[in-house]
Image (cartoon, rainbow, N blue to C red; front, side, top):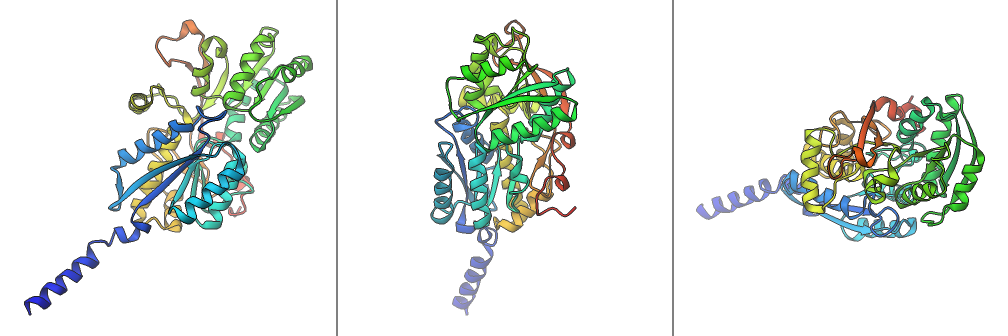
Length: 402
């Protein structure tokens, strides 16, 4: 009888003990950070986003529902085919549960398509195309930090209001550039302005002289840089050499972050108006997070890196609340849970997968205005989330019922 009791007790313990862990596939939660770690966007997100993801895991406690959490990463080299191969390998053979960051819109769109096929969650923090929550939206896809609409409303809208009613675009030749130019054009034309022309160039170009000369000769009041990362930095640097701003035209850096300002320096970047969803010196919470990030990386985070921290943390919270890492259950929680962390205090996820939150308009300080290291921005305005992002019913997402 004693032996029978012990066996029964052991069986009861065996069924009760892993009740939570049994709801976690493969006994662990594995998150892949897939981004550019060696090219034009290496500072934009890169290995710094990987560190931000690790910070989120550590701050969460290292486990969720009793299961360990693992972060892995890879460099997609800004090539959709390479990114797609990595994503399939991660999902099919390496038990990756979710892929995040996904700098470069062509990459993000490709990986979101695979994630939808595999019924896996992807959270985009590094790419901009509004199509991610528009015509190519997914029930398992989330767009977390910014998009081409938020950047156009912020930087483009500010310059139109200041009299910038004629534009010429220098556009990087892929999905992100097209979308950013298109969104800004709508805003310019809605404000009574016009677009005088556009030139497109391949990603990663180093010589912008002919493009800048065309923009200069157009007579446009604003030269819109529909690019990002090192492309934007090089464009601004060479624009100074051609005297574009000195000649009376304005530069609109439609996607420019703290990382690029730091790389370029205040002397070259001063006066540029930009839009970010996060600034390290915004409030006490952002300063505390940035201080810890700096100790690990020797740099302050931009919106992509802080946004990756937020995305990983919210994903883990969703798993914890759902009690499982099963995709449908976690996606449901991600759509329902408010976002309140160091990145934003008022975030909410729409039916199209877009995380709506306030954005901020800043102007890069002159060198003499900067009082300490990384003191780069003057705050201009807050763009409320419902103005910065497209409403779900207007996004073109086929999952949304109007």
